[in-house]
Length: 256
Length: 377
Image (cartoon, rainbow over the protein chains, first blue to last red):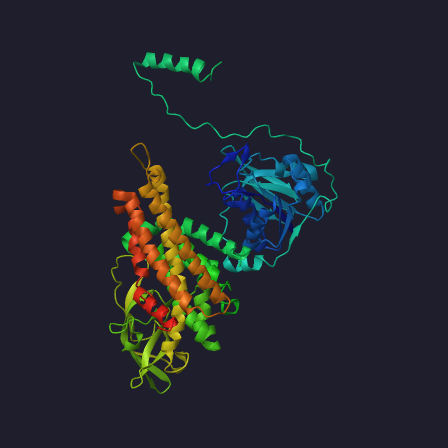
């Protein structure tokens, strides 16, 4: 079995976001593997350890993403592909097109991705990729069973659990709770440097800039307003209620 | 000149940082308060390959360089100095002598389980009459038939209560004060340990007395050449000094980070105290000393990795890093004021931990002596 894992390198969730001229500042920031993608990597490695599988990790992103791929290799993945040609960058639509071109170069039985990336949080890339490839997908998994050609996914459905059966090839996305990702072993880190990591460009993938051109545009980037102190209503109960209703109508404008 | 770490060194550092911050730091204060040796952490470190980090793969280790080992110690030291100290003793003091002076059989039999984390190691040098003067060793080893019979007491022994193997020194030639080194399994009849010492700091590390009464070990457990164990240990102490200096950097960094963050959030007279020159000048000095100490450690580690002489630089690193560490902790407490003196904040623990590094593995006075001798004084 051949497994493809989609990996994105994101800001450490503990980093403070700094904006300058509408751009998120990256200097001095610690980057990590997107936590949801860590579950995906761990799940792929567990499948590999339980049977016979080859795990390829892939990322679309700047050269620094190599660190994330090396970490995945250190955890136990066999091979990495990095699409770090800036001509390949765009939005979720572009990323799915690029990943589809990469996935088509080989025969993958199973594609595992994180449910979403903690930076953009769009949750689109993986499911778009399934659509591009014309294969089914099961999202937000908290448990995955693979028996031969059959896959059973337990998915987190807004607090309920849905059990979905599918046949390979299939794409699945990982939700928190799917597993507990391992630390890469020190010997794994040392071996990771010798595992194959291929860089691919627009030309390598036989794509054109027009085909993958972004469909969306970021109009503005801004930080959320700092939280202001809350207001405690006082007076008797009917007074409080009328004050609250007035505030909801005219101050917070929650009720139209 | 290149001040960048290799991708591998960076990844090792990141991994150890994640491990230390998630698994060790949250329990560090409790380990200190209860003087508990976190054996479960060592089991986890063993599985990750951390306990054999700088030991070659052929002997069960991870085969990383010395700089990586120092980075690991820095990260562990930031989380819990006592845990880091036990880790350092296991590698620098117990495993390294076997790697450097052991026979092939000794490496297979003793180094492999140590490096794989299946057994913990310990090192016994200090005695009541032998501290800075390691030549004052009173423990004796006599060859009787095919066995060495060892008698004596070792003090201030790190990891002794949990170790499977102890590397220790004993007098083998009374007339010429010839000292030899031995590998002693701690389950040998006649071997016992005292109850753990109550210490000022480094309380998560286990420190005991080793008592050896007619302990018989096979003849082939002699480590290195007969009567020349003393020289051997001087060589061991050089790499241990760089390692423990890296640990000091970790403690100092933790104390500095706490002080800097506190100074930015604590307000007096309507502004953060970091805006007052009396505080900011102190923080500037702390940052500068910390950076210079760190460079001294990396340089000594780099020399070691290049197989160049580094005795003097090891002493520079140990002396400067340990004294910087204590001063940084004192300054951090001062920045935190009354809060710094309280157990609720970690800096008083950092200070208690820091002081040991001016004493263990060669006191500051001995480091100055080593440096002076290297200068030909």
